[in-house]
Every structure is written in C-alpha cells, then in structure tokens.
Amino acid sequence: MIPLTLGEVAAIVGGTTTSPDVVVAGPAYVDNRRPEERGLFVAIAGERVDGHDFADGAHAVLGSRPTPAPTVVVGDPTVALGRLARHVVDRLDVDVLALTGSQGKTSTKDLLAQVLAAAAPTVATAANNNNELGVPLTVLRADTGTRHLVVEMGARGIGHIAYLCEICPPTIAAVLNVGTAHVGEFGGRDAIARAKGEIIEALPSSGTAVLNGDDPLVAAMAPRTPAHVSTFGLSGDVRWRNMSLDSRGRASFDLGHDGAWAPVVLRQTGAHQVVNAAAAAAMALAAGVGLAAVADALSSATAASRWRMELTERPDGLLVLNDAYNANPASMLAALDALAGLGVARTGRTIAVLGEMLELGDEHDQAHAEVGRAAVAAGIDRVVVVGSGAADIARGVEELGSEAIVTAGQHEALDWVRKNAGADDVVLVKASRASALEQVAERLLDDVPPAVT
Image (tube, rainbow, N blue to C red; front, side, top):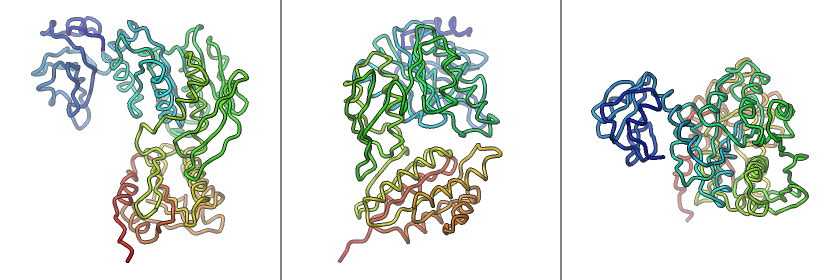
C-alpha cells in the first residue's frame, strides 16, 4: 500500500475524518481476526455481522459510521474501497494482468502469479477473492516495488466485470472459457459470454487480450477489443504437444510459441491443468517473460489454493483427490477424467463422492444426470451421490446400467467410504462450495488405518 494519511484517504473517497494525520501504510483488510500492521480495516455492515462492532483496536478504519478507532466515514465503504484502489493503481508502475472464465480462474491465476514472481515482484489475488471487495483488497496489497499485479475477476451478472475493470484497469486480460457455471444467474451461455467479454473491452489499444482459441464463444470475442489478440489452445498462438500423464495424473508436455518449444512438467493433477498452464503462459509471454523462463516456472509452480485437485496419499496407500472447493459441469467432467487416469496405475477401485452443483437454473437436473453418465463412461467403479440436490447424478448412472450409492448427506457418505474404500483405491470428493464436502476428504485423511499384524 502506498502510505496515505486518513485526510488523503477521505479526500480520495469523498469521506470525512476527525483523524486526518493518521498514516495508513499497510494493506486494507475486512477480517478483524487477521489485522494488517498499520493497515486499513474496512468495516462492512452485513446481514449477520457488522464490522463496525469489531473496529476497536484497529490502526485505522474505513466505515459508514464513526468507530473507537481513527475512521474515515463514507456512505458506502465498498464503493469507497474501490475508489481508493483505483487511486492507488493509477499511481503504480505495474502491469495489471486480469483474468476471468467459468472455470479454472483460480488455478490459472496461481500458476501465472508464480511465473511472474520468478521474474519480478508480483502481487496476486488471494484464493478466489475476485469480487467488488476482493479486487480492491488485492490492489491495496501492492506498493511502489510491485511490477506485476495479477487480478482474478468473477461476475454474477452483466456489468460486474466492467465495474471491476474500472477499479483496476487491465493492461493484459484473459478469458479462459465460457461454461455453464452460474448459468442460472445469467440466463444462458450467451449472457455469460457478454459478461466475461467485458474484461477485454476494458483494455487499451496498447494492451493484449488473451483468448481461448478452442472455445468458440471466447474466440468470437476478438472484435470486442481494441487490443492485440493472442490465443492459447491446441491451434493457438500458445499451444502444446506430446502431452502425457504420470501415475499421479501430472502432465508433461512441450509448450510452444512463435516456432519455439520448451518442456514443462506440471506438479498439479489433471490433464485440464495443461489448458490452465497454457493460458498462464500466454499472459506471461504478453508481459515480456521469455518462453524458457515461463516453462521453468510452470514446472516448479505448486498448488497455492486449497481444495482444488489436492491429491494426498494416506499412510495405508489410499489416495484422496480433494476438489471440493466448487463444482460446475465442466469441472466435474475434468475431475472425473483425472480420477479415471489415477485409477489406471493402481489395482484398486475409483470412487467418486459427488454432491450438488449450484446456480445451474433450468439446466440443473440434466447437468447432474450428464455427470452421472460421464462417470460411467469414464469407467469410474463406484459413484457415491451426496444429498437430494444431486439425486440426478444417480439417475444418469442408472441410465447406463450401473448402480449409484445414494446418501443423505456428508456423514452418511463418509461412513460408506470408510467401510468400503481400501488401501489401493482412489477417492474423488467434489461438489459446490455450499456442500462443504472437503470435510469428507479431510476426515478420510485423518483416519489412521489399523496396523497389520
């Protein structure tokens, strides 16, 4: 954060303060349990919790009413936070690399951040804090030493990404894909495409738009930007060849750009990570990082966000693939493909513990049935369906002549897996965030198998 007095903050955001000389030099934050030294606590009044009630002891506060701490008072702290972030980013000499998509945003962001950090000081979105609070909080972690600012952007409707780009205007922007995640909120894939494309409409003519050349809805966005367009994909400007998977589902491939090729060996599980890596590579190349350096950094990049294709082996040999952070039809199919691949190298069974995918609107039932059919087609040995909201997964399994195990909730699902999964098996756990199925994965890993006598 660029040091600012509360008087300066008040002038920037259109607020008032009785402590104009207090200097804020640390990042902004919204969780009082994780305060930042000399930082700015943003007090948000939510439906259940009011941040103003927890402001005592903060170095400085941005809120909608006075607090015991030095405070800048504004009408809407969220809007004011965005204004403050825009002021700061305008004063920084940084490349702003923004990305969006229906799936893969966080994994791609994590890869890109590590590639860029190997070249120059980089600040990136933490976890998936990609909304009207998360984007300015990311910006306000940057300072004059930052050279790359990596910002993940999400949307719940038309205009959301455009607003986030007003807070943090990108110089390089990527659209990864247009899927059916949140289709119930948007009303269709065409509407999702309109919303996602706002990120490249915000680019200047001197910028670079990075588009998925293998996704027709994304490729069709090219006329919407004045910027140079670079593509990634099997036939893109950035491409891959000779892809293979090891026994843990980690991909090796050659990464290509402008006629040159460099080897990459990923540490993340799943063939779909190759596409994420190619997107990250295309953005890093646009920022001036060389192909060899990009490939080396991708090969050393580790998983930075929890519950996304986390593969852990229990002491007895059971493999647990925890991809329970979120789910949509495309990510479900990718996870099932990864599970099937992991099973090839083992003598045991593949077990998919699957819960509900949310925000699918009218496509909800059919999308779940398709996941069930895909599990059978992939050769998954056992499908455990968790909760009534995911019941159509079982229908899809049964349509292809197989049998699903239907459970009422995570406790019943955990009990079934505990009783039936063996040391040579692989268990995938996946659902939308509200299902909290990561608890199933974590409890499985916490189990200590009895010693063999």
